[in-house]
Image 1 (tube, helix red, strand yellow):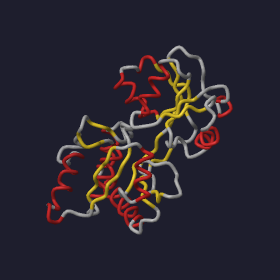
Image 2: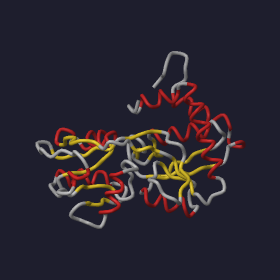
Image 3: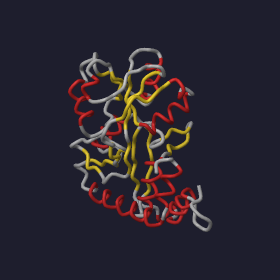
Image 4: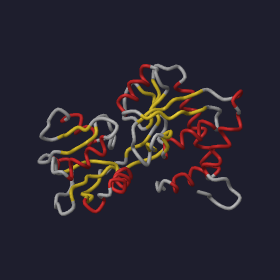
Length: 257
């Protein structure tokens, strides 16, 4: 998407940034992992992952002389591999003392969903006490009361149903529509993508949203001595993209503005 006439598109700028260094001058490699969580991290039929966080991190770090390689894997595995040093970082991790988190690079609001025609609505945490809520294991939803509720009740199958793996979001939608449980919790931008991809948007209704948006960050291993340097580089790169207008263009392209 071109921002204005005479200004490079986001994709063109990214290509130029990566190509300008050349093979002999390519910067240090940073591998960032997560699962398919489109529009933030998107699996593309065998191609390298894309998505808002993927492009943002790649462009921001390229502006500071780094190369980013996105790696598709379940979120909990990405966290574990980051902590163990098998990869350098993870997209959009939950709060975890083992991770050094960047400043937020996006915000995402999570909402509750039921089948169309259902009359249940979310009003407060108390309104969940009579429902089984489908959530994804290890995901963050608000860094607040809802995440605390999930942590407290994760071993209570009468309250929380955990989905696992790279296709956990799809699994939750299918179980909701199949009547396995009445309510699921998902980030609104992600549900919009899932509804479109699975062609089920008309069969699902939004039933209220959490008060707090979830700050989306990039996480690096706390024990890695390079983590602070990477966090600063990411922040500096994001500021450059913001000043150039490319950050706003990227947000618009992914409908996150």
